[in-house]
Image (tube, rainbow, N blue to C red):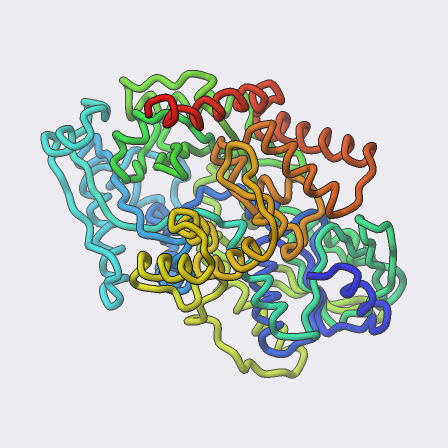
Length: 582
């Protein structure tokens, strides 16, 4: 990921087979697919990798139970296959998640579900026990041959309230089935990138760069970090920019060649809540519930907190989305409906995020009816320019199969054939993943001299790639950073190996410090000081970076500088508690 080497290589050899625009999860997936086939491929991302919708997912890895009533059976089947592949290929970040559906009616939703399946109505409605039982039966049937997780289970009202007494007492039944969740989705993106780059010199990638048309058949690459520009000549362009596809097409194609809008994304907002009582009462389960308006909402334990969401609102400009006050109120109101005895104080919302679902253009009045499936469309080039293959739609769970689809279409146009299949290819810290975690951790502890609990933390963060991190950590003098369980050399490892250009790259995406609500101002300052030293930034540059990050946290994530500062004292008190009690 050496930026200078990448730019030097493009300067010497500007011709590439494929230029992939967009470093979200789908762009990274198709980049990896092509790189592993030996294709000369360049990935360009205008911001940081996985910094848009790929950082704002619900953290679910799922088949899409509710898509069944839209008739999207093939999508659900494909999603369940890909979910199970992720459980095998990325076990360090993807794990089973028992999911419980509170049910308030028996027959409700049957007639409406049928006419919605036939496309005769758009309105949402409450789903009753029979409709949910039918959907879960299909879920079990589609996974019967793999059977990685238990079949669904129904409970009566009494048994349900014995297990979750805080649930709305109007409940009649509950159903529990298994899907999965992902702890570090942005790090999965980085691992896909590294797997692609491991193919050799044929694969190159740049974040904080952009591409625009520069005459017939030619494009100009702008590096936002150095300010440098250079020419590139791709044979094919893949537009994997998600909600930005129509905007990107405007810079890739001459005006007469631009199609009608292809995308019609909706915004989904989520909250991270620090309420230990709520977290504990969930007992490790996701509650997958309907709000009073029929909209599906979720809450589940996430990194010691509780993730609650979400909304589904049409947006025109994907670059300006954030969780608005009315969305926050809606999400908390939905929580109060399903758990009426739970009160969330404003200060318990420690983080919020929003992203745009990359859905195909649709005039449907009900956003829940917009198809969640994915497909590719090719816009033929004009005046000697390359064709543009647009990746439309897609959900996070199916990133591998969507990338495979786009890559196979690209290979066909290039006259090349596939030589590596990624279906059963573990990546990153999922490679050589041990069945006996404890034995692996104690073995690495013995080799490196790091304490077992420190190695266990690294294993949780990086899977088997913890071995590389531990080797770097022990190769030089190290010291702990304030409040967060990170050391200076661990952060330095990320700085040197993962294309970090801004403070938010580290604190929002290479780590889970911000989203988990564990980030304090002191920790942020300590990481910034490491970046200043590593990148030889001047004091004005440091001040600029600090302002950039704090503005982002305040405006996009609802976390003020005063809140981060208050965590300094809170974290210090937590660290001192064992000593006081001793």
